Length: 535
Image (tube, rainbow, N blue to C red; front, side, top):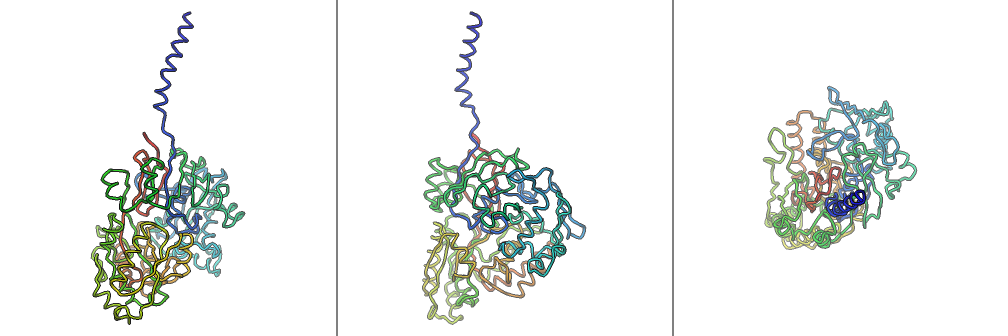
């Protein structure tokens, strides 16, 4: 009887405890996050498209990366590194036991292969200049006039990678945080060609997450990668990226609890969401929203026409009435944020006759000087943009300003990003929506955008004096002297209006308060390695 009573009491206690245990159960470590634009590709060696960053920032890691708690530069696959006294030789020692997501060993040979792949013309690497401009023998290797022996990338053993630069470049360690330097697996790439990124089975990676389901344009599911060297620090088990192109629909899904976060939201809801403390995440951005002129094509091969367009835009109205988010009017393509000896790069910089509001009189004068008084004889041009609710509103406002202030006809056209960007690269546009978020915290992330022949110089602007200064700045080891050279280059280009700068913005998104530990950086990259779901 005593045993029976004891058993009854034990069972009673267990039953009584079950609801409490259920209540105290840890939350599922899964989140759903809305994206608005499909990337043109997710090959880290190829793309420069920010829409690929949710995958590349979370499925890959390079030699060095950013600490998701402090934002400081730390080792990724590299356990340590040294830099020679003359600043030209970087020697990286890889961590023990590195593996690909398929469980196979990852070695320095994989990094050597990745560098050589970037330097293969057929790869069409968008960040090619990050290698050819700095690594010894890289340009010659790419051109086919150099040899592997002369290339400044060596893997003397499985754990050591040695990079030799053309000249000392103090910020090159920061450049190496870019996703283009993430390793890719040779066997997978060679077996599948450019289709290796098309399936979870072949998308072999080395970061905290890997892709388990892929329906690009609809949804992509990431799961924790158990082979990642720091897997113990990864809490999330599953991340579902859903493509919800309409920002109003995404906001409804967010507010109903259907999703945990969204990359963008309607600008008109910013004030309300901010007042309600509804999960707006905002961090300082090192980036610029601008529009590219096709400088190789009339009428924008004329700097006076470009100047007229830049003067005719009311930036304050676009910021306050259209995008309705915290932003600063932009008068150059290089954003504020880089500081040397307490002085920001943009401190004291000319406005190049631009202001927050339109200078209609000056704009009309510039257009008349270009040969189009009162807009007479000016050809109809097309203002192109990629599909986006916010960008559409900006483009419509800009078109109205240009037509009203200059007396010209502006057509508007949009395409999905995957079609739009190749057309822009091919020069099939007049004036197009673009922008740049810094790949690393240094003006040199912007300066090559206008360098003759650079693959990211989409407007094909060219000025030999500018090119020479950019090359000089790349190898200047004194930060203050380098700053002065870069500022001189900026002044030369900006005075010729190669782009139409619009505004400098903050990076913003929506995320529920139950998701913590993520890192959104100044380059608009969302890192989920240390993210977790809390009560």
